[in-house]
Length: 250
Image (cartoon, rainbow, N blue to C red; front, side, top):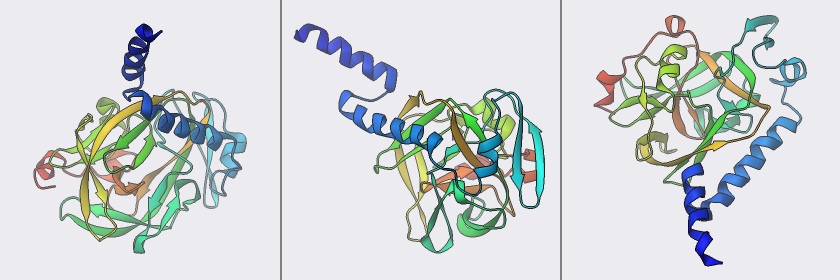
């Protein structure tokens, strides 16, 4: 009976990157993400969710007072599930699905290592079937698409799919994000602190609506579940902040 327990445990580790006692955490997040697909959408996503077609078709999205159609391709970004908390000035947070164009969010300037306030200039959403659960040493987790960039201490921008990140984001060159990397997190005390990435788990949820900020009034960093992450969007419009030249400092 015991002879096959060890192979099973090893197989779970290889597939998920987590030991069996951590499976409950992964399973809980899987259920939460799936519930997000059926949850009544917020005012930002209501129109979009009702009319979103399969990925690869034309997707219609709403911006204030105007309708925009854009062509999406398989595996595009649009990075976080609806319940991801975005940091706001003053220490408050807001679900990313409830953000509005013109709303102020907490930002960070890598060039000066200072926190600031930026206004949301554009938002986007799409349906995804490929997400990753990132777990950190301080106990926090975040669910995101593989291409979303995180700021790593002394290394700059990094993601689980750096080639896609470089093409889609205003981050410039991006390195591979690995377990053991120290990502910067807003500590709540007007400063950033490092937290180590423990492991990454691939989620198998299908048809999950994801959201992201595609442009800020200035800068390209905001905070998702406290972690410093990059804005998705046209690199030429957003501007590419220096990456590796700043990485040695922060």
